[in-house]
Image: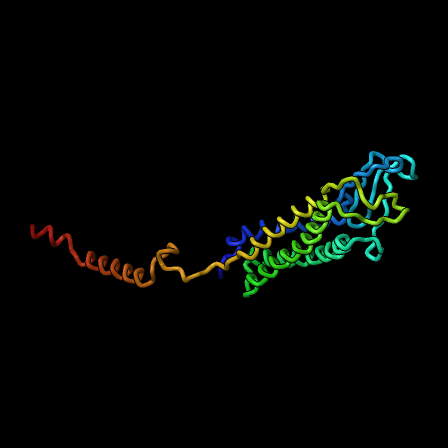
Length: 244
């Protein structure tokens, strides 16, 4: 049976990278600073900066009840732009798909390390790699979409209770988008490493490779030693000395 543990070093690294990428991807859904807005009115918004994320918009204020004022953005709100609504759905989908990808990849690596093949290790690695790629796609689409909205300085018609203008002075790409791009890259590399798995080929070892003598050679050698011993036993050294 093939010793599969020697062939899964890259796949184990892919599992680690995939898990890290999944953690990063899951964290961006809770990050508030996908978009950084600069506004003119600093009476309510201290410093003139606001952060718009997937699930809420926040800013610092010295005149409101809390130092950091946040309002939730719901999928059913009429003012929610399509890129944020898509991010809410796709980020949750990516989290679920990433969980399944981690379980399948861990199952495949475990079987390979313990030498449990059964003809399913290769299939499990391909499935895990495909799921990691699907996770990367689900996270990369909303990230790129929101980044394009920031670069185009698109507006959001916030309700009055958000205290935010519909159009900022300028927008900047926040760290949340950068983390999302980084996590997608890790997931893509992880899927590639997992799908590059090749089952090791085995062959019957020859007698010289195992360090043992061939059975036929061993039998012939034993017979030769016995014959040689018998020949030496037939020589009478005393008879040879008398004839000298």
